[in-house]
Amino acid sequence: MVSLERIDPVRWRIPKSSRAGMRVEGLVFADDTLIQAAEGDRSLEQVANVACLPGIVRASLAMPDIHWGYGFCIGGVAATDPDEGGVISPGGVGYDINCGVRLIRSGLAEADVVPRMKQLVDALFATVPCGVGRSGRVHFGGKELRRLLAEGAAHVVKAGFGRAEDLEMAEAGGCLKGADPEAVSDRACERGADQCGTLGSGNHFLEVQVVDAVFDEAAARVMGLAPGGVTVMIHSGSRGLGYQVCEDSLAALAGAPRKYGIDLPDRQLACAPVHAPEGQRYLAAMRAAANFAWANRQMLTHLAREAFAAVFGGDDARLGMGLVYDVAHNIAKLEPYEVNGREKMLCVHRKGATRAFPPGHRDVPAKYRGIGQPVLVPGDMGRASYVLAGQPGAMVETFGSCCHGAGRRLSRSAAARAAKGRSIARELLARGVIARAHGRAGLEEEQPDAYKDVSDVARVVETAGLARRVCRLRPIGVIKG
Amino acid sequence: MGDFALVDHTADLGVRVSAASRGDLYETAARALYSIIGTLAPRADGGARPARLALPPAGDEGLLLRAFLAELLFLFEARHTFIDNPRVDWPAEGGLLASGEERLVDESRSVFSREVKAVTYHGLSAGWNGAAGLWEAFFIVDI
Image (cartoon, rainbow over all chains, first blue to last red; front, side):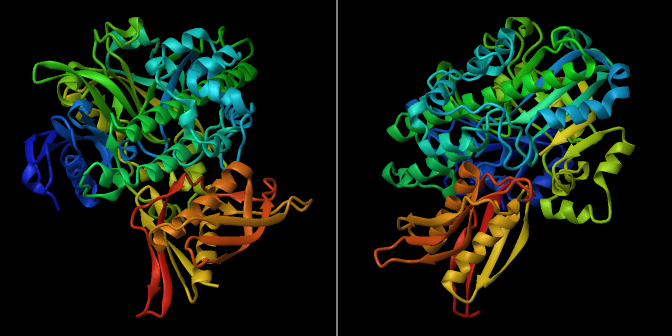
């Protein structure tokens, strides 16, 4: 049990005195309802545990969609200073390296799409490989896969699966420099070889949405989002390749804490100094896996465009299906921040947290530099998702970070029990959402009631000054694995 | 043959296994893992071959069981196979040797439920419970 002190309506402090070994305090962004939920699982303890990591700077942070994870909580953010022995931890990234979200706008309006909604969802379901054991349309193996791991989304764009301008609208241009394909094991490559261009299962999805509320007209206009406009949101990551990279890294790092004299409160915070060979190897492999995820989401974009073109005729350019943005929400990156008056390169872990750079930041695409980086926050398939824009407060308090989603409210088993005797597909249809999934478990365990209300999460980050709401997206069609 | 039960664990699934023997514990844990993935049907047109997995010593029983399950997961994901009736032996030098029949999954006849990303280290335990007179294990899979 950790102690919590309220700072203001959306900030809570976990003081250093909460547990032995904390080097910094914990800072949790949440309102009363969300903090109560966090107190119900052990996620606050995890915030306190992360505060014990060597080289951690300023605070161990948690976003309002906080819930229990492995090592770090989901919604956890921590920056370490490599020059001060700061560590990198796979637990601060997660198994699904660069799980993230991509938003595609279209020139279609709700009225254009609804009459053919079933046809569209069926086309998406048939075109986009989703679910367990599904292989991608293209097999990337051997040397080509290694090239893809180095080049990221650009590799598949060059192969004809996308547009050059897509790369500009992805975080890091859809590719992290410093990836080392040779740091990715043959096993990871074997696991991922036929999975590029697959959605996956669980909470991954491809959703057709309508812009149903605009909060910042000027920003929405720059993003090409208008009321009634149809969008496509894709949530997926690095698939089996990334999971295996994490698995391999956890094994490789098992002895590192002892070797470097790091005393950990939780074995799942296994880590190594960033500058150590083990830390560098994980960073290089993680970057390669992140690049695979961007290539994956780029392939999925191409397939979505194909399905739309098949249903509505013409090509995706005529349909106006341009990329709004693509964000990672499970990643560790080296980013510059001011620490005690000096600019330092810090290792920022975002585990279920999204980068949220403000207006004027040099890493925000030129098109968005006036409004701030788009932050894509999926909710659930019954209610809403949000598009936010990064605010200066994020750079001051959270190393340019923000929430990533709604956060689970019910366990999988509880959600499945709650679904007994119900047809989630029929309930979604009554709400105006056509859903297709492989098997009942997908819809039952991922039903809207299993998640917190993302509107509460979005409101907290806006109140805290981390990001501001640009628009709300209402689902009208979804495919799941 | 042992028993297993799935238990609530936030976004993922916990698995509690119990069995009369060490071998049954591993076989039941494998069965539990496959049941989480779905109901796997083997290809009728061949593709079966003898399986032989050799794993090094792992520190404790829980870690060894986890490594065994992680190997099964890898085979399923990377090679679309599962081990039918796995039998596990423990050589004197440590680690384990698993054998059985490795069979290709028939995707058209299988019913898939969930994608398992990994068998995690969280809450991991396995060993003999003298008081209960059973081998027991607990592990969590990341969905």
